[in-house]
Structure formats: structure tokens, C-alpha cells
Amino acid sequence: MRRRLDPSLIDWEGEPFEIDDVNRPHLFSHEHDGEQDLDDILENDRFLTEAGPDKGDADWIMVGQPEGEPPLAVPLAPSRYGNARQARPIGIYPASGEVLKEYLAWRRRKR
Image (tube, rainbow, N blue to C red):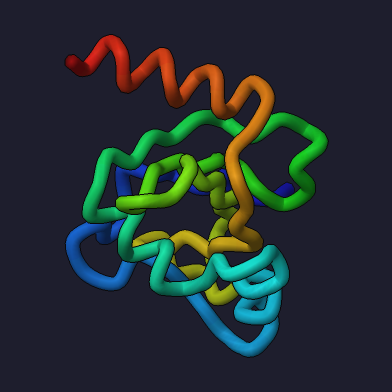
């Protein structure tokens, strides 16, 4: 049985993301989005929501809005190497649908 990613264990202030040659291409497969956007999302309002069953290995979707860009969604999976302090980003793309609605509602409530 696969162990679900626990976001409370992630080292959000240190090295929260596991990036290697396997997932790096997926972080650059959508227009100009990439690794730097992960840092930008962390520096701004990041929001986590549970990933639906259609998201493959992802347990969570991290959403945030880097300055000057639309909100971006990042599916997060558990570390391939068993490191509970890191999440494995398996893509990055403009947020849409229910995930975008949840993020925008969360931001409105924060104000």
C-alpha cells in the first residue's frame, strides 16, 4: 500500500521539493513554467488541496500565484526516495477548474 504524502512533514522553509532528471522535464513541459516558479509560489500565498483520483500519483495540488502570472497548479506526490520532508512535484501548469475556484475562494477569505 502506498504511503500518502503528509504536507505537515515537508520542510517548507528549507528544501521542500525533490527534483531529479525524471520529474525535471515535466516541470518545463508547459510553456515557460519551471523550477523557479516553485520558489515563487512558496514566497507568495501557497494553497494546498487534496488531489482527486484523476491526478495519478499526486496526493496534493499546491496552487499559488507568482507575481505577474496567473495562478499555477503543482501536483505533489510523495518522495520516490522515502524522504518525508520533501514533496515530489510532478508537473506545473495554469490552475483551472475546481482547483482554481478553491484557490480564489481561499484568497478572498484571507483578506
